[in-house]
Image (cartoon, rainbow, N blue to C red):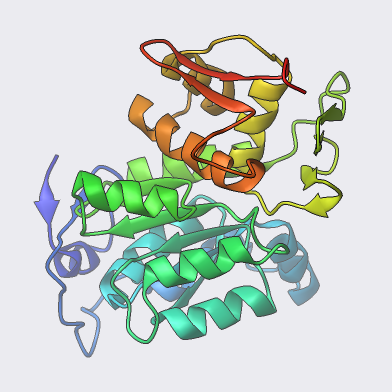
Length: 294
């Protein structure tokens, strides 16, 4: 994989999908090189010359909306260019506070979030989104230079669905976004029925979980993992089996990430996460959803 600066890419008038982005921020050129591509208008290339304004608005309404909260404008432009080529509508914000306000005003279909942001950190944005019951199913992909395993774990524990480190491949980023959006769609499988186990009610039709009648905020991936286990009670699943069953073939998380999601679920569905009644760990084997006590 080649490592090349964004300025070189813009000057060349193209952004190959297999090129990684430099970690080091680049100063933006005041004027683009003659003959270079205007990345902000790249999405208009998909429209024909004679298309009407109403046709354009109709197309934009059907496009998936992705919000990028990132203070490095060069990275924003690169992400925008590649995603608009794939048919997404890309919005952006350069700080956490305005980004969170934008989410609340008009929730996107997916959020790409940097961690080191001015005014409000990416982790705080993630926590606020997951705390809001009207937003907690929003897929969140963290895109950051903080690549240590501890940072990944913290990001996933706070509610992120995926974690990509800089430098990154735009092609890999697009694949992960596609997988997250696909998993965020309701499965629509008629055979999936609501489950009532003890104080819990798990409804796949609405992706809603209640405990003793009170709604439990939950992301789409958290819900799918919970339903997968609860629909197959008292059976032990290894991490790899859970990855295959919940994340499917298009997965970019490691088996250890399953531990993070299980911890998140325990904090939401268990009265005492340290002594779980439902989400049990079978040491050396995996996890099961216990219903015998219920």
